[in-house]
Length: 411
Ligand code: C2E
Ligand code: CA
Ligand code: CA
Image 1 (cartoon, rainbow, N blue to C red):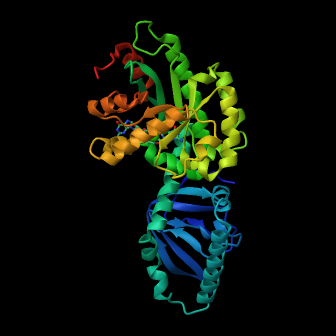
Image 2 (tube, rainbow, N blue to C red):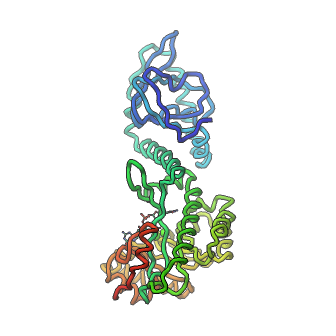
Image 3 (cartoon, helix red, strand yellow):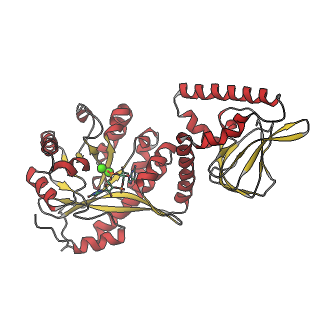
C-alpha cells in the first residue's frame, strides 16, 4: 500500500484513476487540473473537472466499491496521496451514526451516478456545478487543509523540523528561576515558523500527537539534564533542581503504552522524575476520567508532578480535583489579562489561589505581560508565574544565556 506522505506527479493525459478499479487512495490536487470521465459506448464523456485544492478518489476510501469514474490529467499535475489505511483510521474513530450516514449518502450517490450514466451523452447541469458547490463548502476546505498540514507534519517529524522552546517559570517571592515550560515549534523550510496553535490540533486529530509527545518528553529530559548540570552556582535560580513542564494531550492517554513509554524515556535519559511536570487540560480529566486516572496515578507514583493547564476555562465542576493526583493549578492567561480591569476577574483569581492553598496544591499564573500583574499576583500569594514580561519561550541555547544573565526584577 502506498504511503500517505507521498507526493506524486502526473503528466498531461495520464490517468490518475481508472473506472472499475479497486481504490486504495485518494488524491489532493496541489498543482494542475484533471477531468472526471465515464466510459460510454467506447467513448469517454467528461462529467466534470477538478483543480487545485480539490480531493479526488475519496469515495473508495469510505466503501470498498470499485471506482465509478476515471480521472485524467488535463495538464501536468502534482498531487498528495492519501492512503486508505490513514483514511480508515480516521473514519473508524468517528461516531458510528456519522459513519452510517456517510455510507448511506455514498450508496445513494453511487446509485444516482450509475442511473445518470444511462442517460444521454450530455451530462446534466448538476454535474458541471458539482465542483463549485464542493469548493464553497467550508467543511471540505477545513478537511483538505487538515490533510495537507497532516502530511507535512508527518514529514516534519522525520526531517527534524520540530524544536522545543522553553519558557522560564519564575518564583514570585524570590524572583528566581524555578523551571520551564516546554513548547513545541515547527520550522517549516518554506513557510517559516508555524505556531503549535495550528499544528497541535491537527496532530491530535490524526493521532500524530502520540509521537510528538514522546519526542517532546525526550527532548525535555535532555534539556533539563543539561540545564541542571551546567548551572553556574551564582545564577539566580531556586535552590531545588529546576523542573521542566511538558504538555500532554487527551489522546496520549488513550495509547495503551503511554505510561511505559513515559517511564522508559525518563529512565533512558537518567532524568529524575521529580524534575518532570506533566501538563494536561481539564477536558482530559472530564472526558476520560478512568483512563486519565490510571495514567496519572502511575506517573504520580513514579514521582512526576501533574499540573492542570488553563485552569478555570474548561469545566465548571471542581469535584474532579479530588479524584486525581494533581500537584499544581496553572491559572489561565485570560483571567490574568482581565484581572486588573475587572473586579470579577480579580476576585476569581483570588479565589483560585485560595482554593489551591486549601487543597495543598502549587500555583502557577500564566501570561503575565506587565509588572502590575506580577505585583498583584505576588500580593495575592501566587507562588510562581510565567509570561512575556519575564521571558518569552526561547531555544535551549538562548536559555543558557538567559539563566546566566537573569536578575530578579524589583516588584
Ligand atoms: P499553553 O500550554 O497554554 O502554553 C502557553 C502559551 O501561552 C504558549 O503559546 C506561550 O508562548 C504563550 N504565552 C506565554 N506567556 C505569554 C504572555 O505573556 N502573553 C501571551 N499572549 N501569551 C503567552 P504557544 O507556544 O503558541 O503554544 C500554544 C499552545 O499549544 C499551548 O498552550 C499548548 O496547549 C499547545 N502546545 C505547545 N507545545 C505543545 C506540545 O509539545 N504538546 C502539546 N500537546 N501541546 C503543545
Ligand atoms: Ca501548557
Ligand atoms: Ca496554558
